[in-house]
Length: 139
Length: 81
Image 1 (spheres, rainbow over the protein chains, first blue to last red):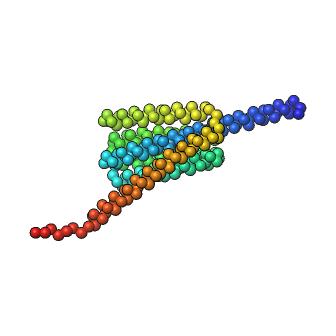
Image 2 (cartoon, one colour; image 1 turned 180 degrees about the horizontal axis):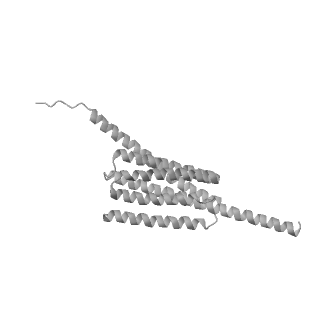
Image 3 (tube, rainbow over the protein chains, first blue to last red; image 1 turned 60 degrees about the vertical axis):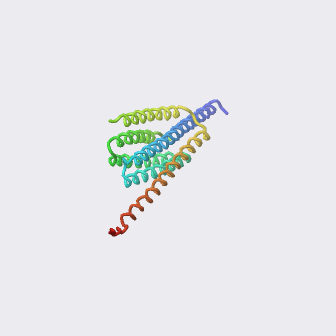
């Protein structure tokens, strides 16, 4: 192999390795964020159940919240499936779906008494921030 | 704001900061496919738990609401002498 060609190959290999590292970093960041998202959602779900048990949430509103958590759990699983495939467009689409579910939960905080509202609102805003940061990550 | 709510808010805020730090640090490290698969498996397990809990709560709620509806439709017994 001529020196010039070999240097081209070296540059090409370096670029491919760099791209693979960047992709693996982005995938790992997205996967870690997905795990944090799941843990955070679970914590908010537990808080809502405690509020319901304490009589601060009406049964019909409790049903709405749990339907929301059900949809969010499914959205997280769909996001994980997209991360496994590693398709950037698909990952972004699933992040947007999860974001929609969290936005729906945020709207529902209006149904809560003030103190309960403050707690869930802070948690959900944090959850939203994770998703918004994910939506700008390139996979 | 009562002390319990304030405490919950502070805990929530500190947990969110920890989460952000964890995600940020994870982004700076190269990852193997096995490592990513393990993280996703943990995330899936938590998501499955969220779904199962939500389903259980909805089932229990349906039973409670059905019982309340049945009670509301129960004919009132005539008052005896």
